[in-house]
Image (cartoon, rainbow, N blue to C red; front, side, top):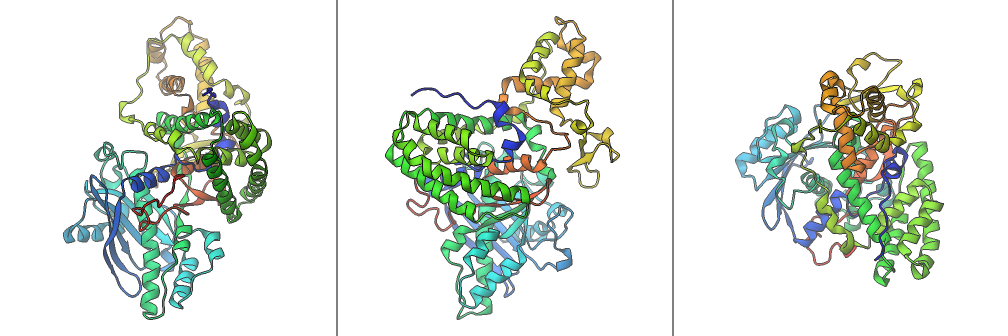
Length: 552
């Protein structure tokens, strides 16, 4: 099999392309689904104690081959005036904890006293994930009304929204006293990136459906119907994500490299295949047809994204027309498909094609999921023995893309990242309009790398970096990052993160695509809504023979 080079970071890690990301079979919720299917996880509703209005508690127990986990869910009344998806909220329709094991009555009572309080609650090492969610009120009510009448809700209306409930936070890794990631990192079923969080959201999805069914049944005990399985499968769990998540792609360079390197390696493997086997070609065309159907129902209020969706629809149509012939006759047919996309399609279409190319090739690429974690506890010690000349040469090579940015222009430095004193979350300030630039976080990687290179130009080339940093400790974080990027090329976003034209939603979409999100709906350039698990298997399907099919 001929080798195909990985796409270079200077192409992959540009903001515009990151903002066109699509989920792939290496996305984290897909990893969870595959393991659950392969290991035949069993999920049962262990408790379901809700009143006529749907308020109360429920427990969903998950049995994996090695351990048990439980989602403990609470549904509580919420006045309209207190309903908000913002982080400042103090009350929610529902709250959840993913519990390590099977909770007894005392543990359920403990969680009932604390989980609805979220940050204000008290938690233990048995609590792995903390989450909360609000109803999509009008749609949730419409679904309940239809079911209570003995009818199924309108499928088009469901598809246009994509969820009945949206999470406003899903916390893991030691937040607010819950278990640190070290407690679960060595467990195969939860050791991959964000697997505990994905399990939590998957179970929340089922609770959402059961809650709607329950309320409808209590309204009309003899005539109500359950939400039909095809409609349940269509729906996911919504999420509103803002600036707080954006700096993640900068602050975790090795982890981010591993994510993108795994995906790019998978793409290169597929492109190098000498022929398209009949089964894989058919699976690709099915996946393409399914994506066209999803895109036809993808709605957004953002004019820019709406235009991109129209372009993507046209791109997928062009791909559908050309793909059969390319797969039948072209040398290196999968590479030919990618090159067709690169030459003829928009960024949305190109990245959609990447996802489609991976879809039929699980046997070839799924092992790369094992490379997508990183032990960040090790840190990144600076190699002080490197010479100043060597570091400057490294920066000139690895940050050559940054030379196109003129940081002497006000528009290139128009913004700054800072941490809100009120909520301790990242925010974006306007440098020439707002106070606070002195609190800037070290996220302007391109500007700082070029500035360090200029500072090193004034040092003897043979001087040791350690000596320079003793005199200029303000450059330590930039030197460290440059050395990390030299080893991990996909660690750096190859763009200006403080420019006037920055769209933080590009960062958000890139990360959320790795989670497995669909239906990206930007509400501004700083936050967006998405759906997780839309179209994915239900908990009652996961241990059924062949529930996921080969392409899952």
